[in-house]
Image (cartoon, helix red, strand yellow):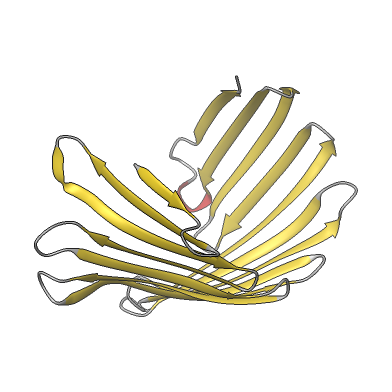
Length: 197
């Protein structure tokens, strides 16, 4: 990867490839401003894929998009768009994904900053299957180093997480998931330990 930082104010140029994969090469241009960010890349092949993403906004409202075009087929292989509203204690967003097939609306509200207590919900609608998924979740800090999270969706899948920081460089997480619609099946349980150098 070769990066040329600030050939012009706010601009960054990146050339990258993986040796010996000749098709992995691409050139990317990034532009950042106080109220805008734009990134575009093109593959270094005979029929490249061209990517464009950009966001405009401020501390309160932002809008963005992400588009990929395959020059070999002449088709858009990806296009997504999103709108985000942020306030002191809430975040709300609306996104259109999967080439316009999935619409997601989400809301996250901080109830108590002292205990890191928050509630959230996400509604996802898939146009091709006319399927709706509603997920509701919450989180609460028992103390500064232990966090509990839980969520459930309209299909009856419930999950919970306990996250504990043993030290600033070690985190222990225990997670479980159960399908309440098929309670006779085994629940899933996971354990993770993350260590920082």
